[in-house]
Amino acid sequence: MLFDTHAHLDDRKYEGDRDETIKRAKDAGVGLIVNVGCNPEAAERTIELTRKYSFIYGAVGMHPHDAKDFDEGFCEKIKKWVKEEKIVALGEMGLDYHYDHSPRDVQKKVFRRQIALARELKLPIIIHDREAHQDVLDIVREEKAGEVGGVFHCYSGSWPMAKEIMEMGFFIALGGTVTFNNAVKPIDVAGKIPLENLLIETDCPYLAPVPFRGKRNEPAYVAKVAERIAEIKGVSVEEVAAQTTANGKKLFGIKE
Image (tube, rainbow, N blue to C red):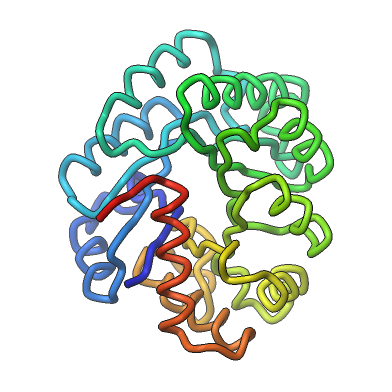
């Protein structure tokens, strides 16, 4: 069984064939999905998906792109949403210095506030880190995020940074970029990271793996991520699938 630990099936890009996309995932051996709702509208759609599909779980939070729209009212919404049985994490949250859609000081403030909320609610966090490695690490340490743990999703940092992250009790998630020949850091990390510290994901509809690069991504393609990691590590796809699924279930408290 495969576990896509980070999907955005609520995205409008699936409006015409969402049910068919989800069926393809199931047919491809994807037994669990965490859908990540990273703004108020996406969170509501995520909850709808968790209610409709037995194998879809959810996360709710505020993406750094939308941090400028964050207020305490959103925290109250999160507290309501997490009462849903299948909301298993807060996120995605973090810092994005590539696009800077929200001012960096605002991104940092909102990241800190969501970590504090996760500690209050005793839920793990899903971290978005793009070109902001040191600031993300500093905030994670200062806010004691290791108390609830979580995952650095779509990991783009170095192996030395990955070791720091694992020492703080976090998982590393690799997605479609590990199949790109020019993705030096993800490939290096895939080769060195113990399977016990690894999750796999698609981040669909973005970052489709080879041979679908440039097209709309979907959860079924997480199989390509597992295959590439198995190839890099010299182990079976079944071993990668089994261990990363067990890791995801452990992190998100999923018993099935």
